[in-house]
Image 1: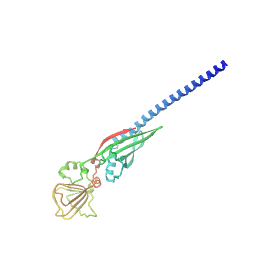
Image 2: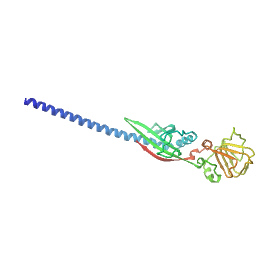
Image 3: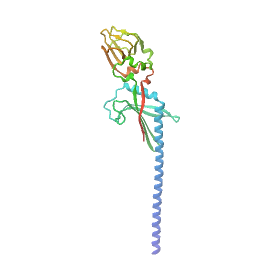
Image 4: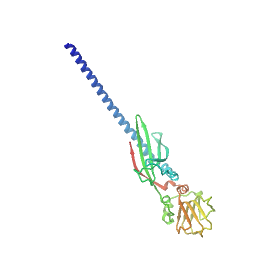
Length: 265
């Protein structure tokens, strides 16, 4: 009986050792798996951040082109504070391969007031068994040519105007074209001297008058940009991004980009 008790005791000890070893083995494996997951997560976040930063630093003109086109689009005022619009996919060169990345207009009250134009660069990747995300938020600061809602004085923006190249095939100097409400002049009119008009003038583009315009009671209607040094009587004006942007060669210079925030996880 004593021998049998010893046998049972030995078996219990062996069972306990077996369970303990299995538990320790699982703990070691769990810690190893956790370490691998953490390493994979760090690598994934690094990859996502790297791609987003490459896009910001090396694809600035693409970002500006997107933003300027976005200015022409209608943004749904019903977007929620975490909503986005006009998302577009781009491809960047990363480690000798093409990787996709997203750019979109966002409304996020935690980033900036709703009235400000904020854009999000978004990279979302899978790496082994983990997921990582990188976000960079940009604010577009507008040049005075597109920021003013009112008619501006030529003298106030002439230095700015000298920085821009207008499309030659859309620009006329010291000439008043024949226009109508149905067929406005879609281009740039530059008047270097005092000018008299004897018919209504409709412009869907840019009108720059460096001297006085005598309207003789006629109307000037402009959709785009108006830079005029005089009384604004008989002039109807609606600032519109499209006709401004479409008539400028170096249009990327119309805006500057500012990084508001970035975060990854």
